[in-house]
Image (cartoon, rainbow, N blue to C red; front, side):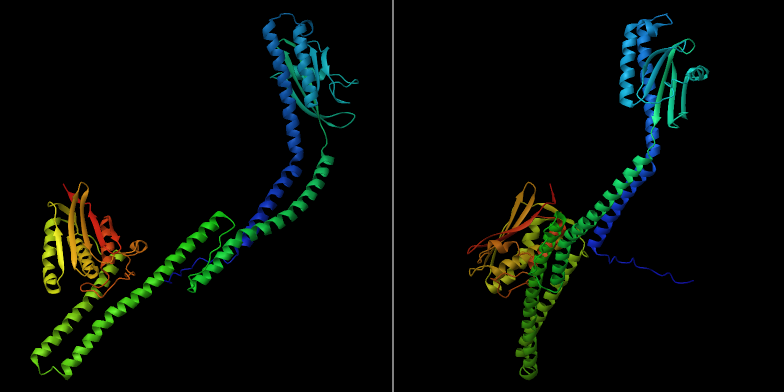
Length: 496
């Protein structure tokens, strides 16, 4: 069995301006093709159909007027067409109006074939031909099943194409009279030639104009995209001061604005990545330097001194733990942001959990002189991931310890509300500037007031943000320069 080959769809290499120009030209050619087809090749047929429809409609209109008058008078007189003045007046009006407006010859005859009324608009016609008779037309009407004839014929002398329509007036069995209509089908060859010449001239002019206008439009439409593409190529090389000019039309403006926003975000990320590398390098270099230094001291000085050797080994172990903690935090943050870690919610008492965490910080408080004050509220049962929420609280307290003031005071509060439980962690440090608050949770950002952590790795707030976003919990920070900061989050999944 032969292996199946996979073909990639060919990428379009046709420029936008050429595509726009081509579509415009195709549209123009299609429009003129339609005009030529319908105006030249179908003109005669259309004209003939129009004359046939006009003659038939006129005959029906005159017959309807007579029929309406006949129903109103209820005459039995077979000569009512000639004897009733009102019928004659109405017929006269419709006959003359129709003859003039539709360019038709009209004749009304009584039941004996005598002329009652006529409208003659053409020089020569069949129904008013002085040398002929219309009795054969009346006989044709009488012989027709529906009392109507529709004939297309040539005039015996002029040879012009004629339409002759006729019908009975009144009863089909005993008609009061007859109606004859004659329409001419004028030869349109000369008209078609004139139209052809006009269309040819107009077509040439408009095709030239279409070519020029399409080139202008294509260039105008593609110009903003060309400018944006050139700017994007500069941005791709790492220049984050590129200007995107989207003037021209709305879509290009939106694209330029989007790329400008992306440029700012990329610039911000690039700066933060550089800061991260610098900060992580600093955090790794210090313990690595100490590890190497104390390892050399054990080798050269304290190898035979158990007390000194154990002291140096404790420092090595402590710094190794710090390195492991930093690596673990980076791995945890990566898993949280990639979505690989899932929530495992359980029910637990938030007050008991906070008290348990406070007990674990007693050793640090006693050793380094920090005072962590906890203000509980009534016990509330919450439903969330206990381990991850515990991680959030740990990181907030660690952050407060790292940034609190010289008094080394940290305040932890539980505040119950109708919609959930708010946990606050407050320090007494220098505070955060208002324009920096929105950056404080970013994993690449580090406060200017940063000092080397007593506990933690510097990635704590990034982990806090990732965990709380997974739970869809509200969080934030309030800060006053010189007075400290208060970090908070709200657990909304509370069992009532």
